[in-house]
Image (cartoon, rainbow, N blue to C red; front, side, top):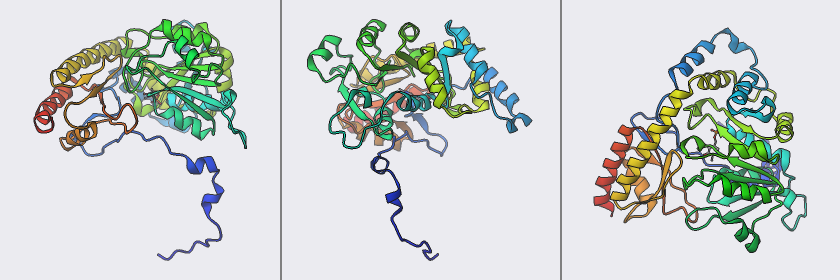
Length: 378
Ligand SMILES: *Cc1c(COP(=O)(O)O)cnc(C)c1O
């Protein structure tokens, strides 16, 4: 067909410059062909509880024509009961990713035209390496970024060191901390997180997407410190990535600000129904966490026996440096055996693979492939 558009001006000119320049977040691959062992996006290998499947099916009827609860009220009440707080301490989002983005809009000033220097009130701060969405959210908001490296073993730098080196901004408008961290899998103690939070004058979000797989969590900090928010999600631990439900816990003031700016119906009705049913069967999920922790430790031992350097993990994935060949060569070799793992082409992590803990059977086949490939590659 012939081009009929009248090209009087370049549509690119209509896009704000910082959006034109934006490099969007790169999600892990979602293959469509069957038979792939998918260890690349930290999904739970097991299905949701039968109660959740049944509640979701039951919700699929004529009510689909109605709007869902605008504030996910029943779900917030159930979560408030679970954590011994008030529904006013809670906001539910279309995945926690939505809420992480709303936080930029509520708490961070965009960069002003002609800003030559980074200003704290327009700064989004985070450690590196951590969740690669944070810099993208800062860019979308046209805020400054302050990425600060973790220690070489991916532990948190002590507060005195952050003070001494003067790279960390204790007044940054918004600080994201992934805990336990991704992609390293490392856990941080509540004490060290609290020490840092006490010093911080802006909002701190503790992103606990993997907390259920860890030995401890920092939820108490969100209920004790009015500038601290804990982010949780039903995606990974509760097998509901497909439904997109996450939530923040924090002071009524900060949470109230986020409610003001969210979409009226930001969480779809089937997602709300599935999340509510999840909370009625927590025993099922606790067993699931223990099973994944066991498989994680077994897989880590098997990888170390094959010459991998595997960090201790507090999550549902392992971060491991393969022997012999570069990590991306290993990734491609695994892919040719229909096993997907994640590799990040970024400083300090490009020697590693991030391997989601799948089912026992999937991990047995993964280890088999590793043993075979080691002979070829290392
Ligand atoms: C997966 C993940 C999220 C996003 O979870 P959703 O609730 O599915 O949006 C947030 N933070 C981290 C660190 C994650 O790994």
